[in-house]
Length: 544
Image (cartoon, rainbow, N blue to C red; front, side, top):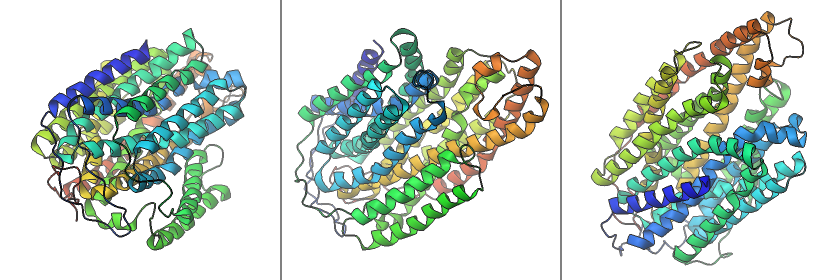
């Protein structure tokens, strides 16, 4: 029922977006500026009316299941790990997906520009579904982690290819409306994920968390297979940047593992941690040197000569450090500090999604209607800074409306511009490079999410241990690094009080540390050059 409701919502939103962008989009005969080494430019395949609505519906399905994948599993992870007897390697469940999906993002983007996106997107959906089948059949943790690895190899291409495919059928001037709907779908998935995960655990069992996404992915394959224009180029006719791929694999793997393990499996500053960081930096330098010589580089260094691309990519990275770092521990915070049930704690956090839902739809429409976007990106940084500052001022046992309001402000701010950053990047480059540019931008966002989650986790655990450990010497076998609401509920009232205060004092001040990052984003958005949004699909790039 929940999946059907989500599908119906996606259809309605797609139809609304089409109505908002009702003027027909005429093909253009002007060819884009052709970068060195680029393939023949894409032929315009402008769509409108029913055809566009069906394509957009298929793309929304792909992005919906990709964004839902993480939130729906988080609620059920303790149950799954307990059932499969794998607490010791629990972190690999999330690390495997993050690692594989991050690695393939730039590859999907580049290949989409070279050979077309239809076949790649359908293959990514199929690979994602295959990984979910393995997870649903898992009889041990190793099989579950393998399934997550496979689904990540497909999932890493879903959002990248969907956003780039949308630019194949809608020009940048009209993309704002659709980007707003995409932001709304992400917000809805963040709300539905924890609720659906809890429902599946209680009613059908945890395996259906993975099973139910399979028919949704296959439906998207069918819809896109029937509605997307055929790829014009053949596979296997372009040189692939294998040295660059290998170097990127080593660099990204080292960085993701350092961020995922730092402060948990290995101490910050230890030889293994520093070795991973040093390896990531060294191989990243090699990667840059290889990309400068490659015929078809995975991430062309020419992207970084574009001012707006650099500003949007760094801003996206810092935003994700702040946003993901702030949100990851709040559901547990509300359960431990404010003694809320898991359901109520999850509902409190949906205030962020509501804020994103409202502003992403509104700003997308405004960008399409007026062609203006810089003011909304500046406002995003200002309002989000206020939201993070307010969260840092919360107190133990606050009235429920206080965190709801503060989280709404943060979501309201993020929704003002998060999706517009992708729109700006796609508008900067010729259409022949739009997939590569989109993938590179999202690649930095993913790195920011990984870094933010790891940094907050490590700093929070360190601060909590320093503050609380000495006050709970009478409690045996208590690991503050793996503290859960269930463990706290079993402690005495006095111990619960000490942990609640310590949890608040350790976590909330970290939100204040993100304020300088947001102010840096504000400066970068003020420096952004406002170029007119292209009115044709096969445009030459506003940043040339």
